Length: 217
Image (cartoon, rainbow, N blue to C red):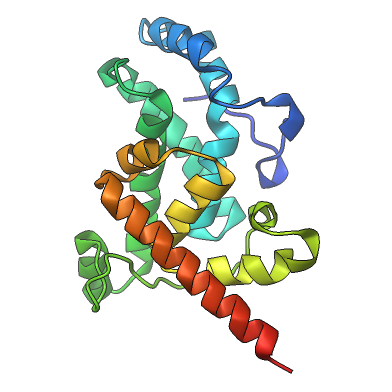
């Protein structure tokens, strides 16, 4: 949808301090969704303002490419605008929107993989049955600075980037976006228990990776 999104370089057109939090904006958000569902592009543009940082952050986490993430975030909002009439206001808006972003990013990842690996991605499981695929992710993401102090940020970023895709998702949504288990489960379309298991395993892997790095001479 032309004119909906105005992400600048690296998705930082609007200063972060100007965004506020999604939680603070929920009452306003519900009104905007209702108006947008009636075809008001201005109301939808304000929803983009509220959520584009979160959507872009998830796309970066999954795709590990800032330019691809910007394109994916743009496509997410285009798709959300087209489907806004199907949104059920009984449920939170953010998980609905992030689910659109996630599904699109999974499609992008699927196109990167050979046919055999696409089947594994569709199944959402790896060979050990943990439900977390190891996908190539060479880039470290600056948002990981929120997971550690400044001195450890680079090491933590690398450790998170090395996690399987499902683990990266839960780490990002929980530690960076501060979403609840319930909302993460709604976003990823998995049970809350699965979210808790993935987060536990992700933390364990991060601790192991950080311990290995500390032991290196």
